[in-house]
Length: 277
Ligand SMILES: [Zn+2]
Image 1 (cartoon, rainbow, N blue to C red):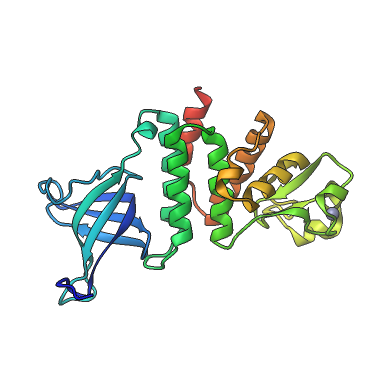
Image 2: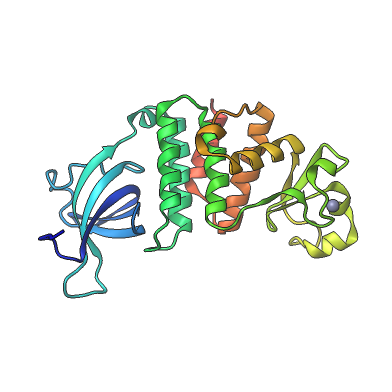
């Protein structure tokens, strides 16, 4: 179909990941887009152009955005031309704990993804997780476990939760209620292997002894594997005990920053909010 648009211009759905002021009038905005992955764009005169940028410029809001590649200097930033709000997730914003969760997921995506690499699966995952919180039918803690474990799979660093990483015994066959999850290796170890000499060599920590990790019960490991495998809507209906939620949170909220190699401000805020409930 013929179009008057320049070939270099494009429009796509986009979740706002980050926003930085640039000079007195402009903003540099990082979006996770459906079609082009994570992109950073320049919003010229953003603070004045209420008409062009009618979309919400808030963190994790979803907008339909129109952008233009720079015509002359190919190294320059993409220009944001227009935004139209699709979903501002007002129910999330009413609630400070829900906002803390959504901000944490947004920071994970912002920190981990490369610029300009299309990852529609991750876009869908984040969008769906935000919608689920906004709808309010499923506990946000459970949605957060869902989001984190599936994000890791889609990003290619799924933790190994099905068997002991040293002796390869399936978790069902391990003669113990709990297994050790090693943050560095991203794998579980049965208590016997964790205590053995060869394992300490294979998984050395800073002191040469065992690496940082946490104990997790078999039931939690099975539930985490399960919600990773089934479709999102079904996974949300699984009943989690409060112990399983707590263990799942400890495991995932430690493993992800450990793996990405930095601390998340949003996670500190989330922990503070959660401790005050
Ligand atoms: Zn073992």
